[in-house]
Image (cartoon, rainbow, N blue to C red; front, side, top):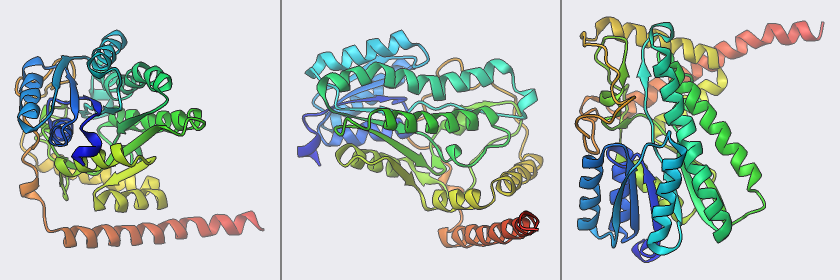
Length: 331
């Protein structure tokens, strides 16, 4: 891996913690030049220092707010100035706001869309002209399982991820005649990062992720593989496959079940003060790669059996719902 990536220049946005930091460290171990972007300067510099210690020839921290298109263009120019090219761009920024839609400030909904959708569009708008001039490049969009399954009580998050998936598909169609330029999507399941603790919380209850929760380094490994062998879509985590399948079979039923689960969880969860989290400013503590969520997961076989059972129930309900309609069509 190191021999393939050692001469590459890789930009990673949202690199100060979680999946972004894990990805930066993975590319650093391969000896790549990594250009790291996030809003928090101190945390970003710490990650850059770690990358240099792991073997990166050049690890550069560039303080960047991806919602500002001019700042992102400056990031692209800085990255290109290091080696004369940008080989891979990992568009990774993601924020969230949890709460009933009408009780979440509209400014917070807008900021989620700016970061999770417009921010990724700014990334692509800055780097695609460079890729086209070079005749090559890999743009890796870190999206979410939320691009396939709706997210009650985080409506703007789901809207941003559905939109980001459509954006990626449109770019692939536009660039179909450029076989050396790749648009790759990554759809992780629930990942153990500081993202949930950093996010905005308007529900006033302590938040966690439902099991199974996966290691962010697993996502990073998938990203490194995509950088070397690009493909359109990658799903990370067995649970993600099961949830995508269930949502395909019975989308409204699945969404209703998720909403019911969340309401039940909120009734039991301890109270916490509402917060804007990291929506409008970087977190006071970057948090590192891990969020401390994996220690609470049950065994994978138990979860898998539950998901399979749910999928079977969903299929039966879906078929039961469709048969009368089919009969009516042919009367």
